[in-house]
Structures are given as structure tokens and as C-alpha cells.
Image (cartoon, rainbow, N blue to C red; front, side, top):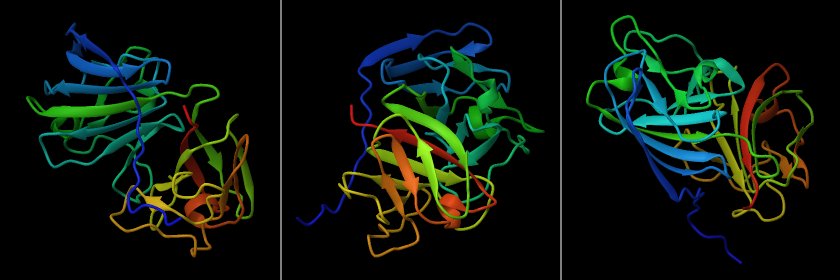
Length: 248
């Protein structure tokens, strides 16, 4: 039949937790699903670059965070780029450094209990501003259900092993700036093979649709296969991050 006009991807986090302040950790409130390797974390900034925030799960492989108070970027840290960051709303390449007003912490600073920030030359207002509210979505890989990792482009074809058949896949070229946004493919919109039905988290544009022939990715029983050398997903001189989930 005709596919729906909208799609949603949902993670279930039923368990509530409050983590109190204990220097340098600041207080946070959490909804989490430990078995699924997922938590939602909310905190109020204290203005300190050295502050830590409790996340409630094992060491996250990927964290997406956003200020609820200020007009700031969606910051992403990822296990594939331990000392760099990305912006979810941007097609830019990965970057490092806190700039003037700081940034979210690198993946290498995540621990089994907390994550932190990177100070800027003047403040940490882009990530932990005093009295501003923040939200973070934390994920770690769970065998048979989720995988967060990286791969190198080949410029031709590429198989990526996950250990399960994915239902959701997001890919980011992190070495090339340009039309290399966060590609999202899923089986809700294409139940057989994802051959072009791409959405971009970094764009307000509509679905590319099956008529697009540049993103040729098929889901398999053990992962996904990229069948071309398109720079967005498999350029020969580029590197890529991904997060993938099976049905649960």
C-alpha cells in the first residue's frame, strides 16, 4: 500500500532515577532502559567546565545533547571519534576544541557513570551554562540489538557487520564537509531493502525516495551492504560513523 506521510523512531525508557550532586558531579534526572543501553538525562548547568553529569547506564558509545534554554547546536560525541565532536543539525565534518564558549565533552571523557564538557577560552556556556537546562540522549551498543561504530569508505562496495538485521540505521561522513549529512534509513518506510529512501537528520528536506539511485544500501541478516561509492555513505577516502538498531 501507500506508505504513510510520517515516520517516528522510538526508544523506551521506563525507569526513573535521580542522581544527586557530589563534586564535581552535578544533579541530574534520568529515564533509562539499562537492558537496551539507553537513557535520557536532564540537568541544569552550573557554569563549570570541570562538571560531570551522571547518565545512569554503562559507558555511552554515543551521546546527543541539546540546550533546552538557549539557541545552541545539537552536539554529538561518538565512540568512533574519541576526541572530536559533531553537530547533528549540520553536514560539517568532525571538529575539536572548545572555542570561545566551550562544547560538549568528547567521547574519550565518558565513563561508566558520568559525562562532561570541554571548556572554551572564556566559558562553557555552549554546553553547561549556569542555570540553563539541558537534555542528553545516551546510547551504548548491546549485542544482538544495537551497534554504534565506524567504518572506512571503499569507493565501491562495502559490507558492515552488526551481528543482527537492522531496522534503523544512521550514517555520518565525519571527514568530509559538504552534502554529507546524517543519513537515516529504516524498514518502516522500505520493508525489503533500503535503496534510496533516505531522510537526513541534518536537513528539513523531504525523503529522497526510491527513485534516488545514489544511496544504495541493503539491510542483511547480519548487517548492511553499501552497493556504491557515493561520498555520503562510502567515499573512497572518507570515514564514517553509524548507529544501528534491531527490532526489540
